[in-house]
Image 1 (cartoon, rainbow, N blue to C red):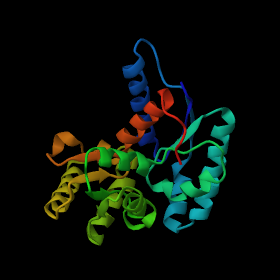
Image 2 (image 1 turned 180 degrees about the horizontal axis):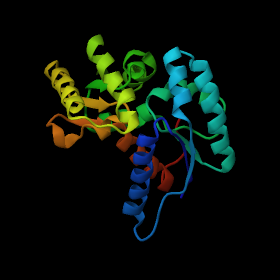
Image 3 (image 1 turned 180 degrees about the vertical axis):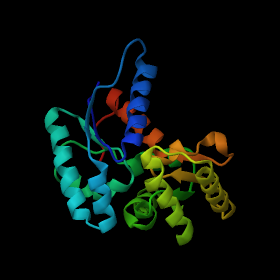
Image 4 (image 1 turned 135 degrees about the vertical axis):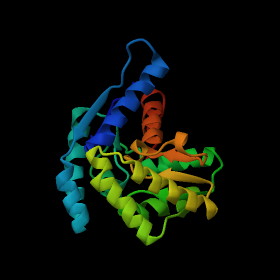
Length: 236
């Protein structure tokens, strides 16, 4: 079994979901008392969040590069960044460490291709929905059309993530809003919806809608399990 390196704490709410999902995945495949071999570096999200909203991505990259190096030195075979948004600095981290990164957009893109999905709606933070690092990777590498909600809806989606979900708060009204946005995107013609923030799965799930949802936390964790058990480290 390979050792999974995790950069977490962004937020710790979703990192807890990752940790459970990965260990449950290992147990499901190996049985008995098996659990995952994990090296987890959990960061103080308050510092990261302030830098994000200040637009200081260079400073966030410096924090994550240092953290990633510590995980590598501790003996991880590959790394997962347990957040969609902070993959904005994945290239900088990749250039700073020798172990490979299992990119969350690649894990999601491969799942979409497997399901023959060519057009998706993307929900997440404003950074993920608006900046090109995520959408362009899906478009250029996997040929998937990515649609995001209009600006007013994006702002509310973003607020719910930071003000509620990252604090462990789940509100019925917020769930209803997310489901409304999902319905609108589906009416516009997308074939599925990416839950492109690792906290969104706390709020909505496939049980809430007939629309096909792609929970990036679940997908990323599942790919990490597969890679730990049998995958070759030919990822980037």
